[in-house]
Image (cartoon, rainbow, N blue to C red):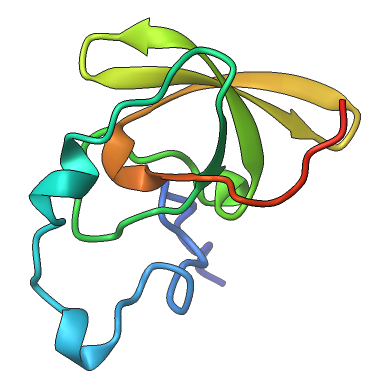
Length: 103
């Protein structure tokens, strides 16, 4: 038997697809220029049309805290199970978190 490949985007067929009307569209300029401050809560929302600064699929939909900035990207602290991970994500893949976060 042949082993299937285990690349960075494996098992993302539904996760990293856009609607028909959104395909090929580049992110809005306001989305790219959005500024986050240290301590802000953000949701990691992967934009499949932008490959630069894209986090791994396991972080999609997770809520994290901005720790700082590195170039154009942000350093985000995310809780994954019982571990805390620090990932570097560009603003195209981040959205402000509007829910209530205790802690």
